[in-house]
Length: 181
Ligand code: NI
Image 1 (cartoon, rainbow, N blue to C red):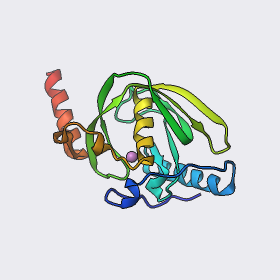
Image 2: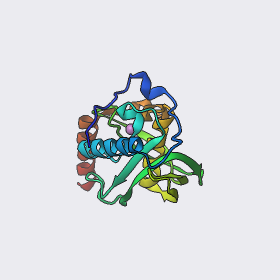
Image 3: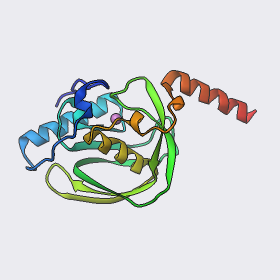
Image 4: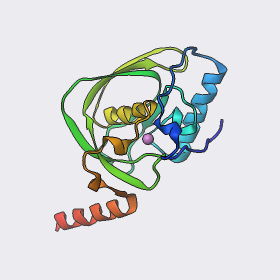
């Protein structure tokens, strides 16, 4: 087990299309998955994609018990998803502030589809086939985008809604206070 250094925005590895896994249940694959899970845990992230630790393979991990900032968000089961296929099931999108471990300190308001089906495999080659909504669907879109070299700022519609986490959330708290009053 190992916490790996994070590849940061600006590194060309984050702009490439990652390759499919062709062999499951191998020590090499298990090592990558353990590194991803350890690194995700160390960074306290919702998810992590293999290119973010410099491995250009189609592997993502995601899952959250509950979001510290948004306690109303439903938990997402801890999932290892390999060679994912996404089918969008709605035209509806919603917007939410996203961050990314490869884009530290920043947040952006990102539109995402609210419902999708995802399919793929776990590290043992067992098939995964789920319908996801809301925050779960958002996490899947964010992480799977990494496998195609897409970082969340590319998905943003309004670059004015992009900034430093400390500033944005301090501002949001002020607005909340104003609304209560
Ligand atoms: Ni990310």
